[in-house]
Image (tube, rainbow, N blue to C red):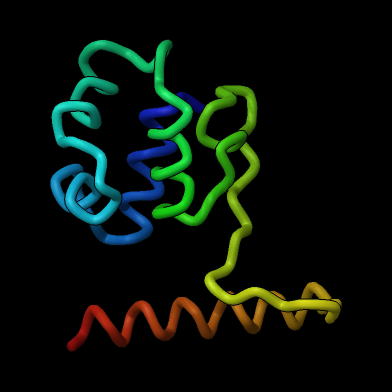
Length: 105
């Protein structure tokens, strides 16, 4: 999956477009638009950091075309606790519920 395919998927997940991504991540719109027209061979590390932080994924996920693992970053951080896969699934379902409730408002 390409860098721009991943960006598209992550933006769709957040319900945003390139313009909102630009404003909320602090990356100029021309930079983001350039990924789609000029390519992504020379993306700055600082840009990858801003994108990964805003989109909730790793820099490796964005930068490595061979990395197609779905990002698993959650907004909350859990220290020292381990969760079963079922518990993590419940957390993901609740996060989706919260996102959907926000869209309805």
